[in-house]
Length: 460
Ligand code: ASP
Ligand code: MG
Image 1 (spheres, rainbow, N blue to C red):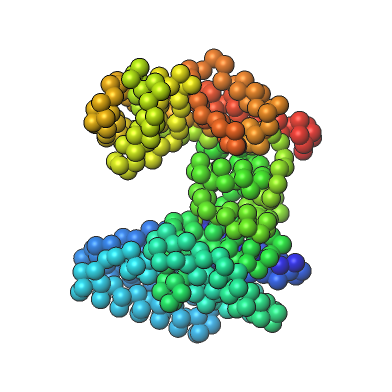
Image 2 (image 1 turned 120 degrees about the horizontal axis):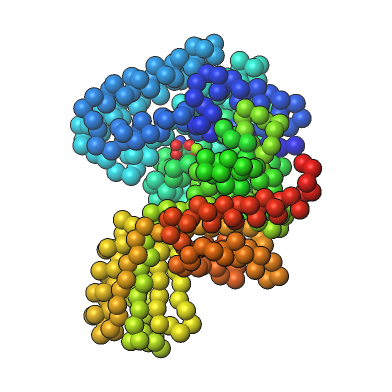
Protein backbone atom coordinates (compact mmCIF):
# COMPACT_ATOMS: atom_id res chain seq x y z
CA UNK A 1 0.00 0.00 0.00
CA UNK A 2 0.99 3.54 -0.58
CA UNK A 3 -0.31 6.19 1.84
CA UNK A 4 -0.05 9.92 2.31
CA UNK A 5 -0.53 10.92 5.97
CA UNK A 6 -1.13 14.58 6.72
CA UNK A 7 -1.00 16.00 10.22
CA UNK A 8 -2.77 19.29 10.80
CA UNK A 9 -1.73 22.18 13.00
CA UNK A 10 -4.59 21.39 15.37
CA UNK A 11 -2.76 18.23 16.49
CA UNK A 12 0.78 19.57 16.25
CA UNK A 13 0.75 21.69 19.39
CA UNK A 14 3.79 20.35 21.22
CA UNK A 15 6.28 17.49 21.34
CA UNK A 16 3.49 15.13 22.35
CA UNK A 17 1.60 15.89 19.13
CA UNK A 18 4.64 15.08 16.97
CA UNK A 19 5.30 11.95 19.01
CA UNK A 20 1.76 10.69 18.51
CA UNK A 21 1.96 11.43 14.80
CA UNK A 22 5.27 9.55 14.53
CA UNK A 23 3.74 6.54 16.29
CA UNK A 24 0.89 6.51 13.79
CA UNK A 25 3.38 6.64 10.90
CA UNK A 26 5.36 3.80 12.43
CA UNK A 27 2.26 1.65 12.51
CA UNK A 28 1.28 2.55 8.94
CA UNK A 29 4.79 1.74 7.80
CA UNK A 30 4.42 -1.88 8.84
CA UNK A 31 2.59 -2.61 5.62
CA UNK A 32 2.75 0.57 3.55
CA UNK A 33 5.03 3.11 2.02
CA UNK A 34 4.23 6.41 3.67
CA UNK A 35 4.66 10.05 2.65
CA UNK A 36 4.07 12.52 5.49
CA UNK A 37 2.70 16.04 5.05
CA UNK A 38 2.76 18.54 7.90
CA UNK A 39 1.10 21.84 8.68
CA UNK A 40 2.82 24.44 10.80
CA UNK A 41 2.53 24.02 14.58
CA UNK A 42 -0.75 25.23 16.00
CA UNK A 43 -0.96 29.04 15.81
CA UNK A 44 2.38 29.51 14.06
CA UNK A 45 0.97 30.61 10.71
CA UNK A 46 -1.10 33.21 12.57
CA UNK A 47 2.01 34.49 14.39
CA UNK A 48 3.95 34.66 11.14
CA UNK A 49 1.09 36.57 9.56
CA UNK A 50 1.61 39.26 12.19
CA UNK A 51 5.17 39.79 11.02
CA UNK A 52 4.48 39.24 7.35
CA UNK A 53 2.72 42.52 6.67
CA UNK A 54 3.76 45.79 8.20
CA UNK A 55 6.32 44.73 10.78
CA UNK A 56 5.52 45.47 14.41
CA UNK A 57 8.36 47.26 16.21
CA UNK A 58 8.94 44.30 18.48
CA UNK A 59 8.99 41.68 15.73
CA UNK A 60 12.14 40.14 17.20
CA UNK A 61 10.13 39.15 20.25
CA UNK A 62 7.68 37.21 18.11
CA UNK A 63 10.51 35.43 16.39
CA UNK A 64 12.21 34.64 19.69
CA UNK A 65 8.98 33.21 21.10
CA UNK A 66 8.60 31.00 18.04
CA UNK A 67 12.22 29.92 18.29
CA UNK A 68 11.84 28.87 21.91
CA UNK A 69 8.68 26.95 21.12
CA UNK A 70 10.31 24.96 18.33
CA UNK A 71 13.52 24.37 20.29
CA UNK A 72 11.54 23.02 23.20
CA UNK A 73 9.92 20.43 20.95
CA UNK A 74 13.32 19.37 19.59
CA UNK A 75 14.68 19.05 23.12
CA UNK A 76 11.75 16.97 24.27
CA UNK A 77 12.13 14.73 21.23
CA UNK A 78 15.85 14.25 21.87
CA UNK A 79 16.49 15.41 18.34
CA UNK A 80 19.83 14.91 16.65
CA UNK A 81 22.29 17.85 16.34
CA UNK A 82 21.46 17.90 12.63
CA UNK A 83 17.83 18.79 13.29
CA UNK A 84 18.80 21.45 15.86
CA UNK A 85 21.13 22.96 13.31
CA UNK A 86 18.45 22.99 10.60
CA UNK A 87 15.96 24.71 12.87
CA UNK A 88 18.56 27.27 14.03
CA UNK A 89 19.39 27.99 10.40
CA UNK A 90 15.75 28.52 9.53
CA UNK A 91 15.43 31.03 12.37
CA UNK A 92 18.58 32.81 11.19
CA UNK A 93 17.11 33.01 7.73
CA UNK A 94 13.75 34.26 9.04
CA UNK A 95 15.46 36.95 11.11
CA UNK A 96 17.52 38.13 8.15
CA UNK A 97 14.52 38.21 5.87
CA UNK A 98 12.42 40.21 8.33
CA UNK A 99 15.30 42.58 8.96
CA UNK A 100 15.65 43.17 5.23
CA UNK A 101 11.91 43.70 4.86
CA UNK A 102 12.00 46.17 7.74
CA UNK A 103 14.73 48.20 6.11
CA UNK A 104 13.13 48.04 2.68
CA UNK A 105 9.66 48.65 4.13
CA UNK A 106 8.57 45.98 1.73
CA UNK A 107 5.54 43.75 1.93
CA UNK A 108 4.14 42.08 -1.16
CA UNK A 109 2.19 38.85 -1.59
CA UNK A 110 5.50 37.29 -2.60
CA UNK A 111 7.38 38.34 0.55
CA UNK A 112 4.38 37.37 2.69
CA UNK A 113 4.31 33.86 1.25
CA UNK A 114 8.02 33.57 1.92
CA UNK A 115 7.60 34.60 5.56
CA UNK A 116 4.63 32.25 6.04
CA UNK A 117 6.61 29.35 4.60
CA UNK A 118 8.73 29.12 7.74
CA UNK A 119 5.85 27.58 9.71
CA UNK A 120 5.71 24.43 7.59
CA UNK A 121 9.45 24.34 6.92
CA UNK A 122 10.13 24.30 10.66
CA UNK A 123 7.38 21.82 11.35
CA UNK A 124 8.76 19.34 8.81
CA UNK A 125 12.09 19.30 10.68
CA UNK A 126 10.32 18.65 13.96
CA UNK A 127 8.35 15.82 12.40
CA UNK A 128 11.53 14.31 10.95
CA UNK A 129 13.05 14.42 14.44
CA UNK A 130 9.97 12.72 15.91
CA UNK A 131 10.13 9.96 13.28
CA UNK A 132 13.84 9.49 13.93
CA UNK A 133 13.05 9.09 17.63
CA UNK A 134 10.85 6.14 16.57
CA UNK A 135 13.72 4.65 14.60
CA UNK A 136 12.34 5.71 11.21
CA UNK A 137 14.67 7.16 8.63
CA UNK A 138 13.07 10.44 7.54
CA UNK A 139 13.88 13.25 5.19
CA UNK A 140 12.43 16.75 5.63
CA UNK A 141 11.55 18.27 2.28
CA UNK A 142 10.30 21.63 1.19
CA UNK A 143 7.48 21.40 -1.32
CA UNK A 144 9.78 22.69 -4.01
CA UNK A 145 12.07 19.71 -3.56
CA UNK A 146 9.04 17.47 -3.72
CA UNK A 147 7.99 18.96 -7.07
CA UNK A 148 4.86 20.86 -6.06
CA UNK A 149 4.97 23.47 -8.77
CA UNK A 150 2.38 26.25 -8.91
CA UNK A 151 1.63 29.39 -10.87
CA UNK A 152 2.73 32.80 -9.54
CA UNK A 153 -0.53 33.74 -7.92
CA UNK A 154 1.09 34.33 -4.52
CA UNK A 155 -1.09 33.60 -1.47
CA UNK A 156 -3.58 31.54 -3.52
CA UNK A 157 -1.29 29.78 -5.95
CA UNK A 158 -2.77 27.20 -8.31
CA UNK A 159 -1.04 23.84 -8.63
CA UNK A 160 0.22 23.06 -12.14
CA UNK A 161 -0.95 19.47 -12.23
CA UNK A 162 0.72 18.42 -15.47
CA UNK A 163 4.15 19.32 -14.13
CA UNK A 164 3.42 18.01 -10.65
CA UNK A 165 2.28 14.63 -11.90
CA UNK A 166 5.59 14.19 -13.66
CA UNK A 167 7.92 15.71 -11.05
CA UNK A 168 6.52 14.33 -7.81
CA UNK A 169 6.88 10.60 -8.60
CA UNK A 170 10.36 11.16 -10.04
CA UNK A 171 11.53 12.80 -6.86
CA UNK A 172 9.65 10.93 -4.18
CA UNK A 173 9.54 7.34 -5.42
CA UNK A 174 13.28 6.69 -5.09
CA UNK A 175 13.08 7.73 -1.45
CA UNK A 176 10.14 5.43 -0.80
CA UNK A 177 12.00 2.56 -2.44
CA UNK A 178 14.84 3.09 0.01
CA UNK A 179 12.34 2.64 2.83
CA UNK A 180 12.58 6.28 3.91
CA UNK A 181 9.75 8.55 4.89
CA UNK A 182 9.67 11.90 3.11
CA UNK A 183 8.22 14.65 5.29
CA UNK A 184 6.83 17.30 2.97
CA UNK A 185 5.80 20.81 3.97
CA UNK A 186 2.07 21.33 3.50
CA UNK A 187 0.55 24.59 2.29
CA UNK A 188 3.61 25.54 0.18
CA UNK A 189 4.40 25.36 -3.47
CA UNK A 190 7.07 26.69 -5.71
CA UNK A 191 7.03 28.53 -9.00
CA UNK A 192 8.92 26.99 -11.90
CA UNK A 193 11.80 29.31 -10.99
CA UNK A 194 11.88 28.02 -7.42
CA UNK A 195 10.21 30.93 -5.59
CA UNK A 196 8.04 29.84 -2.67
CA UNK A 197 4.27 30.24 -3.00
CA UNK A 198 1.39 29.31 -0.69
CA UNK A 199 -1.83 27.53 -1.63
CA UNK A 200 -4.15 29.57 0.60
CA UNK A 201 -5.02 29.16 4.29
CA UNK A 202 -5.65 25.58 5.27
CA UNK A 203 -3.77 24.47 2.16
CA UNK A 204 -1.94 21.54 3.74
CA UNK A 205 -4.88 19.25 3.03
CA UNK A 206 -4.54 20.22 -0.61
CA UNK A 207 -0.82 19.41 -0.52
CA UNK A 208 -1.71 15.96 0.75
CA UNK A 209 -4.26 15.27 -1.97
CA UNK A 210 -1.92 16.66 -4.63
CA UNK A 211 0.78 14.23 -3.52
CA UNK A 212 -1.71 11.39 -3.14
CA UNK A 213 -2.99 11.74 -6.66
CA UNK A 214 0.43 12.35 -8.21
CA UNK A 215 1.79 9.24 -6.50
CA UNK A 216 -1.40 7.25 -7.14
CA UNK A 217 -1.61 6.52 -3.43
CA UNK A 218 -4.16 4.04 -2.15
CA UNK A 219 -5.33 6.55 0.41
CA UNK A 220 -4.69 10.05 1.69
CA UNK A 221 -5.23 10.31 5.45
CA UNK A 222 -5.95 13.66 7.02
CA UNK A 223 -5.25 13.36 10.76
CA UNK A 224 -6.96 16.03 12.80
CA UNK A 225 -8.48 16.57 16.25
CA UNK A 226 -11.97 15.23 15.46
CA UNK A 227 -13.04 11.80 14.34
CA UNK A 228 -14.16 12.65 10.84
CA UNK A 229 -16.60 15.03 9.20
CA UNK A 230 -19.82 15.39 11.17
CA UNK A 231 -23.47 15.53 10.14
CA UNK A 232 -23.65 18.99 11.78
CA UNK A 233 -21.50 21.27 13.89
CA UNK A 234 -21.30 19.29 17.17
CA UNK A 235 -21.26 22.55 19.13
CA UNK A 236 -24.74 23.34 17.82
CA UNK A 237 -25.97 19.76 17.60
CA UNK A 238 -24.61 17.47 20.29
CA UNK A 239 -26.25 14.48 18.58
CA UNK A 240 -24.19 15.04 15.40
CA UNK A 241 -22.45 11.86 14.25
CA UNK A 242 -19.51 11.06 12.00
CA UNK A 243 -20.38 10.71 8.33
CA UNK A 244 -18.90 7.32 7.42
CA UNK A 245 -18.73 7.78 3.68
CA UNK A 246 -19.04 10.72 1.36
CA UNK A 247 -18.69 11.14 -2.36
CA UNK A 248 -16.09 13.61 -3.54
CA UNK A 249 -18.86 15.82 -4.89
CA UNK A 250 -20.61 15.90 -1.54
CA UNK A 251 -17.32 16.64 0.20
CA UNK A 252 -16.68 19.54 -2.16
CA UNK A 253 -20.16 20.90 -1.46
CA UNK A 254 -19.49 20.64 2.29
CA UNK A 255 -16.04 22.21 2.05
CA UNK A 256 -17.59 25.20 0.32
CA UNK A 257 -20.16 25.45 3.07
CA UNK A 258 -17.30 25.82 5.50
CA UNK A 259 -17.31 22.36 7.06
CA UNK A 260 -14.31 21.43 9.12
CA UNK A 261 -12.09 24.21 7.86
CA UNK A 262 -11.47 22.23 4.70
CA UNK A 263 -9.67 24.08 1.94
CA UNK A 264 -12.27 24.27 -0.85
CA UNK A 265 -9.81 22.97 -3.43
CA UNK A 266 -8.76 19.95 -1.34
CA UNK A 267 -10.68 17.55 -3.53
CA UNK A 268 -9.63 18.84 -6.94
CA UNK A 269 -6.80 16.32 -7.28
CA UNK A 270 -9.16 13.59 -6.09
CA UNK A 271 -11.42 14.26 -9.05
CA UNK A 272 -8.42 13.97 -11.36
CA UNK A 273 -7.22 10.61 -10.15
CA UNK A 274 -9.96 9.17 -7.92
CA UNK A 275 -7.71 8.68 -4.90
CA UNK A 276 -9.52 7.97 -1.61
CA UNK A 277 -9.29 10.44 1.27
CA UNK A 278 -9.96 9.62 4.90
CA UNK A 279 -10.49 12.20 7.65
CA UNK A 280 -9.66 10.81 11.07
CA UNK A 281 -8.62 11.67 14.59
CA UNK A 282 -5.00 11.46 15.64
CA UNK A 283 -6.19 10.66 19.15
CA UNK A 284 -8.30 7.69 18.02
CA UNK A 285 -6.73 6.58 14.76
CA UNK A 286 -8.74 3.36 14.83
CA UNK A 287 -11.99 5.04 15.78
CA UNK A 288 -14.75 6.44 13.58
CA UNK A 289 -13.71 8.34 10.48
CA UNK A 290 -14.96 9.63 7.16
CA UNK A 291 -13.99 8.01 3.88
CA UNK A 292 -14.31 10.25 0.85
CA UNK A 293 -14.20 8.56 -2.50
CA UNK A 294 -15.32 8.88 -6.05
CA UNK A 295 -18.91 8.02 -6.99
CA UNK A 296 -22.25 7.95 -5.21
CA UNK A 297 -22.27 6.30 -1.83
CA UNK A 298 -23.89 6.25 1.58
CA UNK A 299 -27.24 7.62 2.71
CA UNK A 300 -29.20 10.14 0.67
CA UNK A 301 -28.51 13.03 3.03
CA UNK A 302 -25.24 13.71 4.79
CA UNK A 303 -24.99 17.02 6.62
CA UNK A 304 -26.61 20.31 7.50
CA UNK A 305 -24.83 23.67 7.65
CA UNK A 306 -25.92 27.05 8.93
CA UNK A 307 -24.68 30.39 7.63
CA UNK A 308 -25.61 33.41 9.73
CA UNK A 309 -25.28 37.11 9.08
CA UNK A 310 -26.80 37.29 5.62
CA UNK A 311 -29.09 39.82 3.97
CA UNK A 312 -31.49 39.34 1.11
CA UNK A 313 -31.55 42.07 -1.51
CA UNK A 314 -34.65 41.99 -3.68
CA UNK A 315 -35.07 43.96 -6.86
CA UNK A 316 -38.68 44.14 -7.94
CA UNK A 317 -40.66 45.96 -10.62
CA UNK A 318 -42.79 45.41 -13.72
CA UNK A 319 -40.08 47.27 -15.66
CA UNK A 320 -37.99 44.13 -15.38
CA UNK A 321 -40.37 41.71 -17.07
CA UNK A 322 -39.01 40.51 -20.37
CA UNK A 323 -36.16 43.02 -20.25
CA UNK A 324 -33.10 41.14 -21.42
CA UNK A 325 -30.00 41.50 -19.33
CA UNK A 326 -31.57 42.63 -16.04
CA UNK A 327 -30.13 39.65 -14.18
CA UNK A 328 -26.71 40.39 -15.65
CA UNK A 329 -26.94 43.99 -14.43
CA UNK A 330 -27.92 42.93 -10.92
CA UNK A 331 -25.03 40.47 -10.69
CA UNK A 332 -22.61 42.94 -12.13
CA UNK A 333 -23.61 45.54 -9.55
CA UNK A 334 -22.92 43.04 -6.78
CA UNK A 335 -19.60 42.06 -8.23
CA UNK A 336 -18.54 45.70 -8.68
CA UNK A 337 -18.70 46.26 -4.94
CA UNK A 338 -16.87 43.01 -4.33
CA UNK A 339 -19.83 41.19 -2.79
CA UNK A 340 -19.94 37.44 -2.84
CA UNK A 341 -23.41 36.14 -3.73
CA UNK A 342 -24.42 33.18 -1.58
CA UNK A 343 -27.77 32.36 -3.16
CA UNK A 344 -29.87 33.61 -6.05
CA UNK A 345 -33.54 33.24 -6.84
CA UNK A 346 -35.84 34.46 -9.59
CA UNK A 347 -39.43 33.41 -10.21
CA UNK A 348 -40.44 32.61 -13.77
CA UNK A 349 -42.69 35.70 -13.81
CA UNK A 350 -39.42 37.67 -13.82
CA UNK A 351 -41.00 40.20 -11.46
CA UNK A 352 -38.12 40.06 -9.04
CA UNK A 353 -34.61 38.84 -8.42
CA UNK A 354 -33.27 38.13 -4.95
CA UNK A 355 -29.70 37.72 -3.82
CA UNK A 356 -28.29 36.66 -0.48
CA UNK A 357 -25.09 38.48 0.50
CA UNK A 358 -23.23 39.14 3.76
CA UNK A 359 -24.90 41.74 6.01
CA UNK A 360 -21.77 43.87 5.78
CA UNK A 361 -22.18 44.18 2.00
CA UNK A 362 -25.95 44.69 1.86
CA UNK A 363 -26.00 48.50 1.77
CA UNK A 364 -23.34 48.72 -0.90
CA UNK A 365 -24.98 46.10 -3.09
CA UNK A 366 -28.42 47.67 -2.96
CA UNK A 367 -27.00 51.10 -3.78
CA UNK A 368 -25.00 49.70 -6.65
CA UNK A 369 -28.10 47.96 -8.03
CA UNK A 370 -30.16 51.17 -7.76
CA UNK A 371 -27.51 53.09 -9.64
CA UNK A 372 -27.23 50.54 -12.42
CA UNK A 373 -31.00 50.33 -12.86
CA UNK A 374 -31.49 54.08 -12.85
CA UNK A 375 -28.67 54.40 -15.36
CA UNK A 376 -30.48 51.95 -17.66
CA UNK A 377 -33.88 53.59 -17.20
CA UNK A 378 -35.47 50.52 -15.60
CA UNK A 379 -37.74 51.45 -12.74
CA UNK A 380 -37.52 49.07 -9.82
CA UNK A 381 -37.77 49.04 -6.06
CA UNK A 382 -34.97 47.57 -4.00
CA UNK A 383 -35.65 45.91 -0.68
CA UNK A 384 -33.11 44.84 1.88
CA UNK A 385 -33.89 42.30 4.55
CA UNK A 386 -31.05 42.11 7.01
CA UNK A 387 -30.11 39.48 9.52
CA UNK A 388 -31.29 36.31 7.81
CA UNK A 389 -29.76 32.85 7.93
CA UNK A 390 -29.15 30.25 5.27
CA UNK A 391 -29.70 26.64 6.23
CA UNK A 392 -28.33 24.09 3.79
CA UNK A 393 -28.73 20.37 3.66
CA UNK A 394 -26.24 18.35 1.64
CA UNK A 395 -26.45 14.91 0.12
CA UNK A 396 -26.70 12.96 -3.09
CA UNK A 397 -30.46 12.59 -2.58
CA UNK A 398 -30.89 16.17 -3.78
CA UNK A 399 -29.76 15.01 -7.17
CA UNK A 400 -32.22 12.12 -7.26
CA UNK A 401 -35.52 13.28 -8.77
CA UNK A 402 -37.44 10.60 -6.87
CA UNK A 403 -35.95 11.53 -3.55
CA UNK A 404 -35.57 15.28 -3.56
CA UNK A 405 -39.10 16.03 -2.29
CA UNK A 406 -38.25 14.15 0.93
CA UNK A 407 -35.57 16.69 1.64
CA UNK A 408 -38.10 19.50 1.35
CA UNK A 409 -40.42 18.05 3.99
CA UNK A 410 -38.65 19.50 7.04
CA UNK A 411 -39.27 23.00 5.68
CA UNK A 412 -42.99 22.86 6.55
CA UNK A 413 -43.71 25.24 9.42
CA UNK A 414 -40.64 27.46 8.99
CA UNK A 415 -40.69 30.86 7.33
CA UNK A 416 -39.15 30.54 3.88
CA UNK A 417 -37.65 33.74 2.52
CA UNK A 418 -35.73 32.25 -0.33
CA UNK A 419 -34.96 28.83 -1.77
CA UNK A 420 -32.09 27.71 -3.89
CA UNK A 421 -31.64 24.38 -5.58
CA UNK A 422 -30.47 23.70 -9.11
CA UNK A 423 -30.67 20.40 -10.98
CA UNK A 424 -27.03 19.55 -10.37
CA UNK A 425 -26.80 20.84 -6.82
CA UNK A 426 -26.06 18.39 -4.07
CA UNK A 427 -27.41 20.89 -1.60
CA UNK A 428 -30.68 22.63 -0.90
CA UNK A 429 -30.47 26.07 0.67
CA UNK A 430 -33.34 27.67 2.54
CA UNK A 431 -32.94 31.24 3.65
CA UNK A 432 -35.02 31.82 6.76
CA UNK A 433 -35.20 34.19 9.71
CA UNK A 434 -32.37 33.94 12.19
CA UNK A 435 -34.88 32.98 14.86
CA UNK A 436 -36.23 29.99 12.96
CA UNK A 437 -32.91 28.79 11.61
CA UNK A 438 -31.98 26.49 14.45
CA UNK A 439 -35.36 24.77 14.50
CA UNK A 440 -35.23 24.24 10.76
CA UNK A 441 -31.66 22.96 10.88
CA UNK A 442 -32.67 20.55 13.62
CA UNK A 443 -35.48 19.14 11.51
CA UNK A 444 -33.08 18.61 8.63
CA UNK A 445 -30.60 17.03 11.00
CA UNK A 446 -33.20 14.62 12.37
CA UNK A 447 -34.03 13.59 8.81
CA UNK A 448 -30.32 13.05 8.10
CA UNK A 449 -30.02 10.81 11.17
CA UNK A 450 -33.10 8.83 10.07
CA UNK A 451 -31.69 8.37 6.59
CA UNK A 452 -28.45 7.11 8.10
CA UNK A 453 -30.25 4.63 10.28
CA UNK A 454 -32.24 3.21 7.44
CA UNK A 455 -29.13 2.99 5.25
CA UNK A 456 -26.81 1.32 7.72
CA UNK A 457 -29.46 -0.38 9.82
CA UNK A 458 -30.31 0.50 13.41
CA UNK A 459 -27.46 -1.38 15.03
CA UNK A 460 -24.19 0.32 14.42
N1 ASP B 1 -0.47 26.46 8.22
C1 ASP B 1 -1.40 26.85 7.20
C2 ASP B 1 -2.58 27.57 7.82
O1 ASP B 1 -2.63 27.72 9.01
C3 ASP B 1 -1.84 25.72 6.35
C4 ASP B 1 -2.62 24.63 7.04
O2 ASP B 1 -2.62 24.54 8.26
O3 ASP B 1 -3.23 23.83 6.35
O4 ASP B 1 -3.43 28.01 7.10
MG1 MG C 1 -5.11 23.18 8.83
